[in-house]
Amino acid sequence: MVSVIIVNYNTFQLTSACLQSVYDHTKGVAFEVILVDNASSECDPADFLTSFPSIQLVSSKKNLGFAGGNNLGIKAATGTHYLLLNSDTLLTEDSIAKSYHFLVSKERAGVVGCRQIFPDGKIHYVARRFRSIGWELLDLFRFIIYMMPYEKRSQLMLGQFFNNEKTCEADWVNGAFFMMPAAVVRELPNQKLDDRFFMYGEDVLWCEQIKQLGYRIFFYADTTIIHISGASTALKKQLQLRKVMIRHELAIMARRKGKGLYYLIFAMLYVGKEYLRYLIKWCVFYSTGKLIK
Image (cartoon, rainbow, N blue to C red; front, side):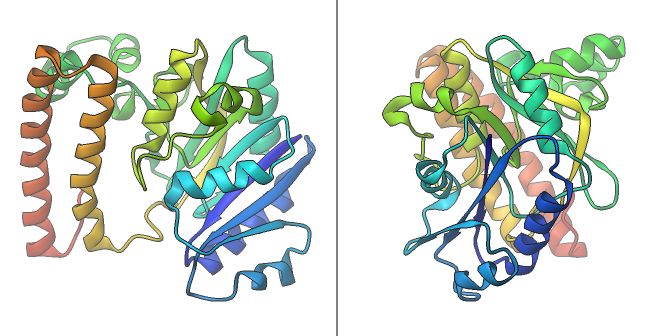
């Protein structure tokens, strides 16, 4: 059985649409739904039970962030597998069953994430490589990448250099659809997901820790969900959150490589590149009101 864990924070309509899509499209596997309300002020969390009486509602008196909220859901879960599903996603097919059957068919599979698109049909690049000095240099001097054959550059870089049409192993996958065996979580420290980050970058951290345990991370291309993305985050705040994501990436690199010479070179390269992009995004935002990717 799959325990579908959804964390809600002031997105009642979106979360309701997500829940409805789960019940409408999940047919090929037994499942339960655990809805964790992260101290929302928008409405009474019990309102969800009116339309979805079969969910298990867990109400937190404090906003614990994405990781903390999911850990509450995991405590209540009884399934053999967990699916962390963002409240701003919509299923259009039996993605849960398809992903589950793929996951259990792969030896040492620790996490599977499926293909995601935005509401306008554009690809959300969810299959990723861990950052490294080499990756940052290639990302900075992209003409080198585009001199490579597609198959080579796509598997070397993933992210936006990969068209998301082929199932593959990745270093990490986006946390909006994050399926894993319950047994994997029991091998993690304190038998829970690392909650050192309140929000953003948790999926990278979790995948790094799960890979350290000897498990594999998969991107599964044969089913697609819609990810509205950023629905609970105001447009202006998305730029401010870039700084948070930079801090978290540096913390993950320190965990992976320590704080020696490699870390220092990576930090100078990565932070310099990201703050240049950050400055460009701010200029565009304040001059046009648009947030560029």
